[in-house]
Image (tube, rainbow, N blue to C red):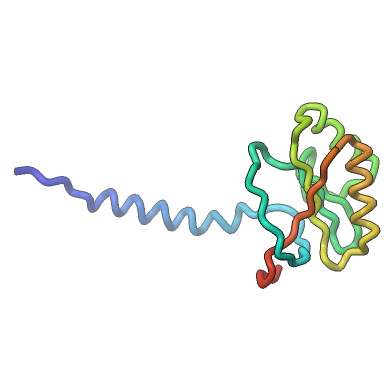
Length: 133
């Protein structure tokens, strides 16, 4: 009667677990912003990567596509890049991550720029209440 030795499989699984635990925090990329907290329901219908515009505490714009996502861009570049993405993917989800300390007018101005670029609907990114950022 033969038996299967599972010890090597367990070793491989534990090594993979350690690798994933080390690399998972490194995958978080982008600009750090302190998001406002709300009780809103999370979005769950994301087929493609969304187009995310970040407005940091100083009012600078960062876009997660084109060039370096951690490089601030001006309003004209924002409109051009967003329009290019929306021409290729007209149903792309467009989201705005505004720092909770940034002036409300700057977030509205960013949303207006996205609308100029052709975004019909724009969502706002928040954190669940109780999860400090």
